[in-house]
Length: 119
Image 1: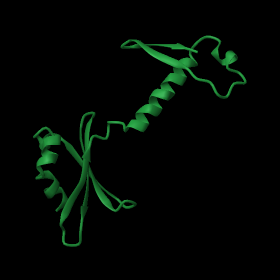
Image 2 (image 1 turned 30 degrees about the horizontal axis):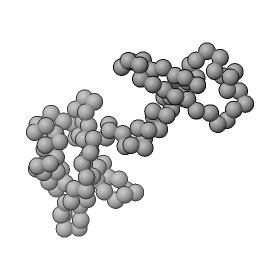
Image 3 (image 1 turned 45 degrees about the horizontal axis):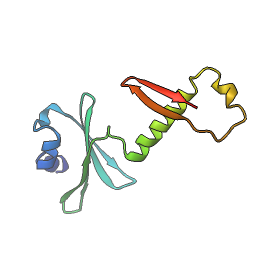
């Protein structure tokens, strides 16, 4: 019931580029949140549908999203972690920061593949 409903939903079909047969489908029941999660994957692309089914077999789609897109807080944390890792690549930085628990770094994009760090 769930899979048939989801595969006939216009928004889901749009997320799947109008060709749902090209996607692998992995249904899973999340027992903590009491909802179904249908993961659609094609290579590295992904779409996840959260849905619920009641006792009358009525289906509601709660949300549809790309699991590869980071939320803002996660993206900010990953950028912070990358800046810290980059700062530690500078020669002698470990000795210079020895004993300092609260320090900051500034990172600036120089070219697409190169970041420059200053301390």
